[in-house]
Amino acid sequence: MTKARLAACFALLIPLATSAHAREPAPAGGLGGDPFGSGSETDPFAALESAPQPAEPGQAAQIEPGRSPDLTLHGYLESRDQIRTGANQAAISTRQRLWLEADGTLLPEGTAGNLGEVRFFASGALDIDPAAADLSDDHDTLRLHAEEVFVTLDSDDLDLVIGRKMLRWGMGDGINPLDLINPLDYRDPIASGRADSRVPVVLGQAIFRLPAVGPLQEATLEAVVIPLAQVDELNAPGSAWEGYALKELRKADAQGQLIFADQQKPDDLWNDAEFGVRLAVTTSGWDLALIGFHGRLDSAVLARDLVLDSNGTAIPRLTPIHPTFSAFGINVAKGLERSTIRGELSLKPDLPMMLRDDKATPGYDRRSVVEGVVGIDRTFGINLYTNLQYYFTSIPDAADLAGESYDHGMTYEIHDLFLQDDLEAGIRGVASFANEGWTFEPYAEYRLGDDWLLGASLLLFEGPEDSRYGQFADNDMLNIRLRYSF
Image (cartoon, one colour):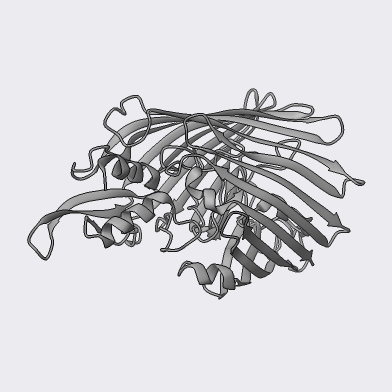
């Protein structure tokens, strides 16, 4: 393996450590409620899953003081097929899913003095996916799993949340440099052409409502503790989402050029904890937030040392690890009559980065990284929605690093409604301006009444084979979904 190829591998293993994770965007046409609130979307291709739900997670069971606790059950049945469109027209996934959610009130407000209202939310799924299971060990043919399960205590001045939860921080729509809490869903990482999907983590969350003084309309201080950090898992050999870097490193391991050791994930409760704090205010129509975070790097870097093989020859051993890092940033959003402007800027001092020299030990160094997003979404006419977001990553001192010193690009989405607003059709994707490739996804979804949804899209990846998006060019796919909600 040449030095250039090894350097490319090292850079690809951490594409999301130095560029922001993408998340499924907020609802079209505005902020979608509190722009600093949490999101709960974990299912891939989430934009095709926006059929009306009876309740927002953890928000449905609103009970007047003195009423008895209630319970709401809802969910959906769904068939999703992802079929490659290239020379290898095999199915990536033929997932059949039963999704269930339950939410309600355990203790209505006023039943326990000044305790406030105690609510709960739980969701989970039964998945059958023989096609994905045939590709790799990442998937089981039959999988029963919980998603979000948490309890919320609401009072006048304090909200507490304990459990397994999705929690979105950051204002970028499609790219979020400060969205650091939930790791990537390695089994099903692509949510859409412009967003990835995540998995919930066990956490404790406290939100303090602060006095609104002077020009402030609202102010909150939020603290989050994750007792055991969760990180991105490496895909198994043969997975549809096993990237170029992993394939090359495993090939070199098989040829005896190096030893590719097992991933070392955080496993020490509390010693491997993560912490975050956010101060959010609303003033003169602007939503502002200051964010600080300390935890483990979601994407692995490779720790390198030398070991002796059976012949006594020293060869490199590469171990995927997740060092600690910190991040600080600010985000802003302003909702206008028919549009939203938003921006985000983050500083990650001493972020672990892979070195270009494939013989250097320990194989990575720490550098300061600046990331940002600025964008606008707007609705033209009645329903023509447009969303453009420019993102960048800057590493001032990157001459000896495997990655580039400046990475930038754009996410986009345009869609409109037809047939009495029952049909939504549009395009979305990501375009890198730094030779990391692009994605493009034309899509349509048709709603029949309140219960049925039929969706289809064609997701395309393009770029050099060792680039962020081009490495998945063989995964150009047709997605077909049929869902019944109840």
